[in-house]
Length: 319
Length: 301
Image 1 (tube, chains in turn blue, purple):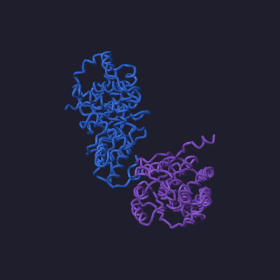
Image 2 (cartoon, one colour):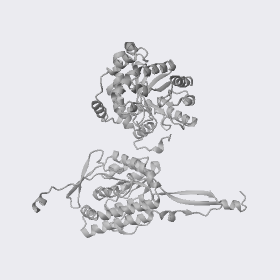
Image 3 (cartoon, one colour):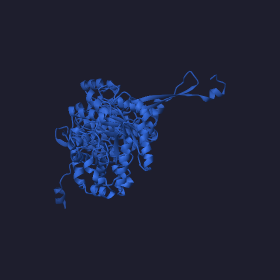
Image 4 (cartoon, rainbow over the protein chains, first blue to last red):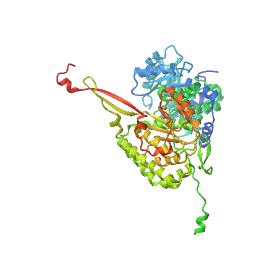
């Protein structure tokens, strides 16, 4: 199975001009909003217990992109986060490491040092995160800077203004340019900020646009707006990556981010993954959670399963 | 007209838990039959599960910051408000206590009146307990040394099994008066007055989550609460000897404060309480502060 989207040849002709791209994206089937939300809600009612729960918790921990994206981030905080990503539960060495830490570009070097020698990757947001309101050269410089500092993954934001104005080609070309700036070493995650796209139809279009342009991952949101990852919009994106693989043979990852705080929520998302795209995606190479407080809840639930008594916030780190 | 009144369908009350300021059914969906002293069916009460207990701890922890941070004066006002609200629903509680404990109306009335007075009594204590158990300590050095009582945190209360209302209020009020938040496991056999108390608390400015009321099998819910790492103290008033021992062992794991059960005769609940039930769930914070004045007057430091 190919691991990058650069071979999306069957769709090459749709990107010839803005009008052909527009025709293609608007030709995608419309989303049945009620059906989508109903499906997401009904999958959320699955009861996952005992050994399945233990498996789900460990899987979810291994899928966390442990994130700190604050103006007040300090090198010390990033180092602490890195240590936590490598060994989430210092009292229990069987707890898996998280997938990555996610920081701003200027913190990449610090993060890289903090996770050195482990499996934990360093992801960096770039392209004038979170608004994405900057000229292309600035965005590309942002990306190159992060890649040069050693980032393994780049989380870019799309230009929502251009997308909503119907200038799909501009969005496409930006993603292509950023993908090129990432080079061969860094995987590219494309953030759509679904909360700002207004409709499910737009989320489906953005997903296809991102995948055609070569995204390795499509990601719901920045975590900086009111509406972040919801089961419904994640389900929609999972359907998009499933259909995209059927059409092109290229597998693309999905990352819901923001607003996932409890183990229960995380397990619901894993059920969505399993039921929509199957086991191929049940791996941190293809599915991630963008979260910070989620990890503590996962660890507390894990402690409950191992010790049999409910844990509390006093027994996980404050970050 | 009178014929119509006779045809009116009776309105049964659905008793629910009180958790986080809301009135949920048990997460498990279970109920159990509650009977009066003679075995006649009274109502179905929720049969709480461990998950209800866990949710209650989350609610209590969330409420702790606000409640312990409120001024003692404000807490006193709110506790007094509870008494006011109870006074307005006196008849209901008299009926429920009479049914639950098989008491005559005058005896049940005495219980309810004493319970209302107990809220007033503890309302008065909220801003006075600090003077009794705190204060300035004389130390050998140029320092002010001040001790003040701080609430322990989230407290689990096993309400007395026999005295379903006066006993309950007597153990609950001192816990929240000092700024703790509480999870109460109501009397297993007669939980109805406790569940109705939730309705009173919800309408008397007590913030949601400060008091959480669970009904069900004490032996089912209490062990997971005693072992819960986010609970700071447990009052074993309603536990028998075997259960108390088991819970005290479980509570030792995170060094919970434990108040052992005391044999209290039903009549003894009427006696004016001391401060013991408040001080059982208080920590002492001591602050050292340099006395600036000595420096100015030629002290060596």
